[in-house]
Structures are given as structure tokens and as C-alpha cells.
Image (cartoon, rainbow, N blue to C red; front, side, top):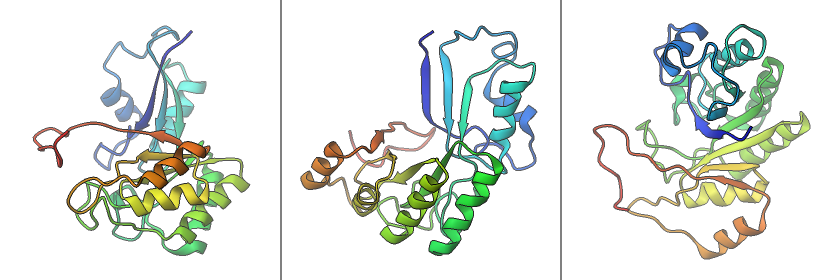
Length: 219
């Protein structure tokens, strides 16, 4: 049956640290909405890109093998980020090309479905602005090369123009957000847009306003 796919979810990342998969289940899916729900429910697939402690993998496996019925989960594990970088608190801090390759292999051993890396900063962490790059193009190349060597796709979080350009250049499988934020606005380079259109990179555009937070730029 056709259904909805949630491409950028953070099932475990938005909960406190001392939780297990049952807490995630109860917090994410209200009582009665999962257990016994028909498989034709509207939300059929979640791509979880903001895990903490690999909890989303435990929930994924419970849906696959346990008595609960829920959406298919494609889990990345904790996203790769530089030390002190965007969403560092999810536990994915790693630096340098060798470190990135080791981190990818660790996630492969854990059984993830996709690899997520933070190419730029973001709005949730004050250390780097969304427009600022965290990783070099060589770093991103190491991530995509190692992911592809193990048969996995690489999802790249990128707000800033340089991060987006680097993600396209290395052949990232998807770019999350892709907002082209600069320090004081938005600047989408037409040449980069043409490269995106000609590439095999999928864009996972996101549009949301956090509670009690004013939009950074007017629509």
C-alpha cells in the first residue's frame, strides 16, 4: 500500500540520555497508534538521521522482529560531527579522514542502514553557524568512499553554500536541508544549482519553525 515517508527524523536524539527503545516507542508513537496498527497506516517509513546510542536501531529491530507493528526505520546511528560540532551531544564526534573512516566502519558493524555526516553547522548547536563548514571536501570524500565501500548511502547535512558544493562534488547520495544559508541571508549559486540538477544527489529539503523560535530569515 502507498504511504508517507519521513526522510529526516530524530527519533532518539530529541529525548533525554537515560532512555531505552521502549521510551522512544512511547514518546514517538502515542498509545494505541503502533501496537496492532495496520501495516497500511499512512506513515510507513522513517529515515532516522539523529540517533543517540544506537537506540533507533533497537526500535527498528523491535518493529522487524518483535510483537509491535510500526513503520520501517532506516537508521544511521549517531551522525558524524567534528569535536564540539553540530549535534555533538548525540555522540558522533570524530575528526580527520582516518577517524571518519573508522566511524563509518563502526556504524557498519552496528548494522546501520545509512551514514549521516554534518558538513556544516546548524541551528541547534552554537559552536558553528549553519553557513560554516565543519568538514573539508577531503573529509566528505572519505565518508562517502567508506560508506559506498560497504554498500551504504551517505546523507550529508549541509546548510552553507560551501558545504553543499562539497557534498555535490564528492557524490553524496543525499543533501539534508540544502538551504544555502550565508552569514546574513541566503545565496544560491546558479552554477551549483545546475550541478545539483545534473547530479544523482537527492535533495531532502526541510522547512520547519521550532517552538518559541523566530524564523531566522523571512520566507
